[in-house]
Image (cartoon, rainbow over the protein chains, first blue to last red):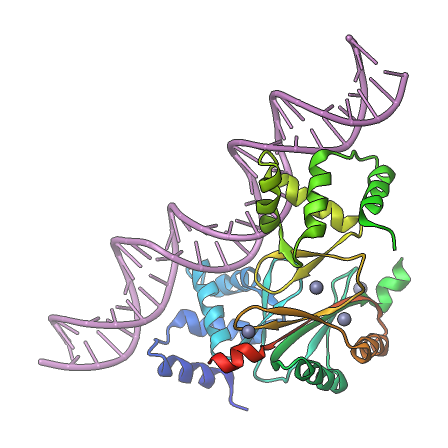
Length: 144
Length: 144
DNA sequence: TGCTTTTTTGAACATTATTTTCAACAAAGT
DNA sequence: ACTTTGTTGAAAATAATGTTCAAAAAAGCA
Ligand SMILES: [Zn+2]
Ligand SMILES: [Zn+2]
Ligand SMILES: [Zn+2]
Ligand SMILES: [Zn+2]
């Protein structure tokens, strides 16, 4: 598994783009950060390192990272697009506590397989999916 | 299964709200309409019947319908909240063509069961889920 | 290295979807 | 009719994101 920085460099090269300190910084921050960061949250962290970086650059770079396959968009259903690293770890889905927002990553191969099957049954070729499970975590269940 | 209009009336009553011609009209249009309508699309149809109805009223009423359990929000991942009737037919998920947007409703009981299981395994109580499968429909596959 | 071309950046402004404010209005209760 | 309370439409406010544009920085070349 290639490290994200070289993936990004190659992507940059391949598309005649340029490597800049801003892009470097944003990638660094993105990789070190907690998962599921919105652009705005990332922006806050980025400006701690370099207050001169603009909001738009963060949006633009996240889009880039997404195109390069380094970041993956996740949509929890509020209007905010979040990103998570996509290359290192494999695919997963999300199990989210409706009360406290705690969010864990889950994977069930049997579900994955059935999703394929289901699409095939309708004569579609499956290219991806998103699945979010909502519930109550043990902590919030006790608390109420 | 109660018809949506009486469900709505009861909801209105129960919450000390008032039944108005606008709400009536919007519910009517919503129920007759194709599925997965965005507020804005619905607004266009509504104003054909009564051009005086305001945009905000449509937003407000859809929210109401959602609270009343008559409409259900669906999120396809573009920034738009869509609604579909929720009382008549049972739960389903969505299979969406990435190329032409065609969207069919699907259901696989085995997946539904495994989702329960998966949540339980992590000690969550599942309250709901959303699952969207993305792919290419037969038509778009041929077309390319 | 200096010069040229092309891409990038930040700031401000534009957009899109949705919400809120508020004065005029309409329904229900008396 | 009179009062109270919820509702409406228009316009302004928000929130997330996209775009424009002149200035700055890279990369390519001399
Ligand atoms: Zn919780
Ligand atoms: Zn389902
Ligand atoms: Zn298609
Ligand atoms: Zn549906």
